[in-house]
Structure formats: C-alpha cells, structure tokens
Amino acid sequence: MRRASQKNHLVTLNEINITPLMDLAFVLLIIFVITRPLLEQSMNLQLPSVGKLNTPQQVKKTDIRTIEVGATGTIRYRGAAATMDQLEIQLVAEHKLNPKIVVNIRADKTAQWDHVAKVLGMCMKNGITQVAPQTANE
Image (cartoon, rainbow, N blue to C red; front, side, top):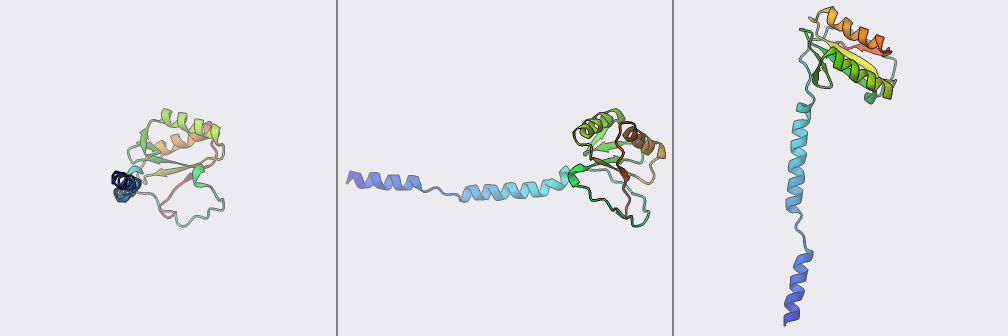
C-alpha cells in the first residue's frame, strides 16, 4: 500500500499549473501596450504647413534622429530636454558611429528662427549634412 501512495505523490509533482503564469504574461503585455505611447514623449508643436513634399530618398528609421525646437527655444532630443552643448555631443558621437544619420528638425511655427538656425549651424559645423525640416503635411 505504501508504494501506491508514493506513486500518486510523484504524479502530482509532474503536473504544473501554467494558468497563473499565462495570466501574469497577459497582464504584463497589457501594461507594456498601454505605457508604450507614454514613453515616447514629445513636445506639443504646431508645425508649419508647406504643402506636400516629395521625398525621393528611402531612409531607414534607425538612421533618423529627431530634434524638436519649442516656441520658447527649448530643445528636446530623444524625448528628453537638452542644451545645445549636450545635443552637439550626442549627435557627433552618433554621427561617428553611423555617418548615414539624417537629422529631422521639428520646430514650432512660432519658434524664433534663431533657435532653429543654431541647430542647423551645429549640424553643419560637425559634418552632419543630411538635415531635413518636418512640416505638418509630411
């Protein structure tokens, strides 16, 4: 009789209930799906409209870097506020690793040209020649 009870005990050890694991996986999936858009924070900009632009080049998304210039001259790069010096250091380092990067400048239509010109000048000074403005109709 003792052998039968040991055998039943071993059978129950071989069965693992994966329902709680699946529930946890689905909850984590839902959390990541909901928080993903919140991680991509950007400025609320009113981009100027210039009509439909033709873009003949095919650029990989991994090669695109976006700089945002707010109406008051605040600069954001990769979702974080940055000074001009910090921006220059980051872009130069990335340009050395990947010379094919394209810098997109999203500037508020009420932003002063001086702020945008500083970003353009910084790119040109460091050999980053593929710079493109972004407008509302792109």
